[in-house]
Image 1 (cartoon, rainbow, N blue to C red):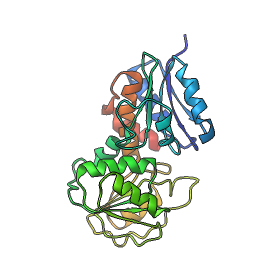
Image 2 (cartoon, rainbow, N blue to C red; image 1 turned 30 degrees about the vertical axis):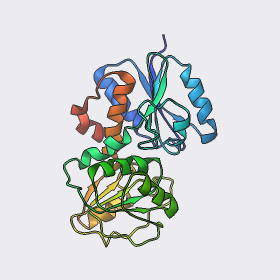
Image 3 (tube, helix red, strand yellow; image 1 turned 120 degrees about the vertical axis):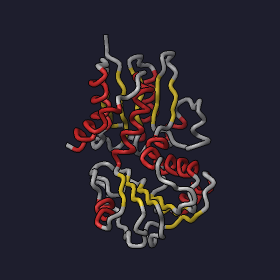
Image 4 (tube, rainbow, N blue to C red; image 1 turned 60 degrees about the horizontal axis):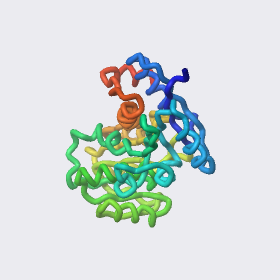
Length: 270
């Protein structure tokens, strides 16, 4: 009998730590299942979903760059993710064979900020892709102050501000960083194999938080620059593990054993 499995898909995908995370939890819970990484290019996404839909051993997949928005047109949307976040990062095949999408990025992103008081706080978000949508959704719920989006296309950033009812500005990546209590990089800039994120953090106040969702490398140039200034930092593993835990329960029917987070983090860094 074939073992049940889930996977992470993207283009590129070799950098993904999701297989390590899910394999760790499967081992701890002694669940007989697998989790793998699968390279899927945009032109093959529809075929991939159609094939997996017919596979009874497939439990679903995590979705990374660049498929989070395209997935909206390929699977069911019972939670109306299209109208809220507008991007899917988790696809599930249930016991009835139905395939639906949801988003665990927003909650995964916000978890390490839960103790921070962001009400009315000015925020800068770099990027305007699928991950940015989840981040902006969470920030809007947190009641943050003006949001500045830095993106190659300011028009795309402005559209996202309007979508989530956020006041602020959309500026090109080359713009000077405005003072902000929280800076979040949601783009692939600074990721291994991608162009660097060139930004001057000097305008940030001493109590600012710098959050980079990139996790390969874990210690990005952005975080190094922030730490050199003595700013509080949050790395990409925080969001990655948080969103993965919610997806794990959807795939395998049991909560992720978060009591082992310290051990998991050591394994991921090693």
